[in-house]
Length: 474
Ligand code: SF4
Image (cartoon, rainbow, N blue to C red; front, side, top):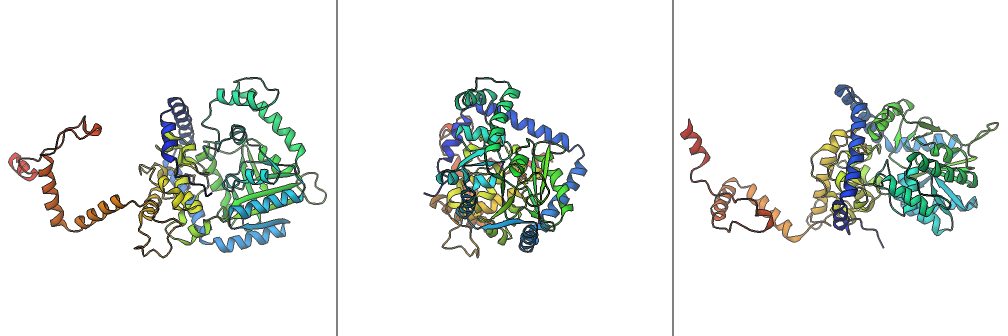
């Protein structure tokens, strides 16, 4: 059965907003992240200059995406990396399961990778009898809890330290309850370190792939990414086809925008440049490196000028931290791999509008997401375009490239009301006559029409026009 995040969205949202404890801890975490980001950009002019540069790099890279992908494959192959192309999540699953099964791996240890979440890799590995273990601390916590990540940078941000302490005591053999954060981290590290020794396959995401050198860049804070990419004999990296730049010199501006926008850090603790398997004479590193390049709807977004900017994203999560909807309902309510504003603009391309039309309406369009996006993705405008697509009548639409599921959010009554409104609005005289009639009618309606109007007094038609009142005053 196809997964439908739109199903149950309202119920999941209600469950979060009616949980004051969850809202408080979530709001506190988001306020903390916003303050950290702000402290990293003290000079507004310098920030805008950096955003201009970041936007230009991402737009330039996307403008040359097909040829850069060909160049990347050629240079990676020259470096000894095996490149695989996957059009769908199922294809990506088959490739990775095939690599792990071919190596007779019993366990794949994973670094943080949202694309591996997107393809539901853990389920596919488990179905093939291969274990999957998350080694990023946040991902490890949500895996233990049997949940999805609620944030793309901090997957377990919805959990308090007491909840994590209980989880560790219940799920990790021999561990006693402790709510000391240092001790909890040490416990996690001890468990994970052992697993790195046992496995032959490590998996990671990719933050940026550099076409001219065939280099995979990976940003992380815990060192688990470096372990996944260097300890096991085989390293499998997976990324979306859009995470590419042409030159090495394009990486530093994106890197500084990413770390400062994501976690409020000037630099990350670890920055990994992966340029191939272990060479003769080298003492460590994997013997095989694979890269899986996933499409999953991205090339459709790329082909449509209205939506191409969606692919500029560098997955910093700043739009989520500043979104008044996300900060109240949390990431789990969305039901998608990518929650918050970035989730609302990317998920319709990955899953279609039939599955995601409710999500594109979950925005106040306040514009905060667009204002903080380090690569200036016009998120509010993209949301409006997606709303149009979800409301369009597919039978009457002249759209040459409608999104999958276009029209799924359309309901007969609102569609009729909006058509009637459009008809009137295009005819000023008729519109004025209609408005005049409505203001007169309003006076004969009952004062109370339900809970919403209980505290409000209905507007009464003015005895004299505004024009008359102003004229008498002067
Ligand atoms: S849309 Fe912009 S702010 Fe949001 S995750 Fe992507 S790059 Fe960051």
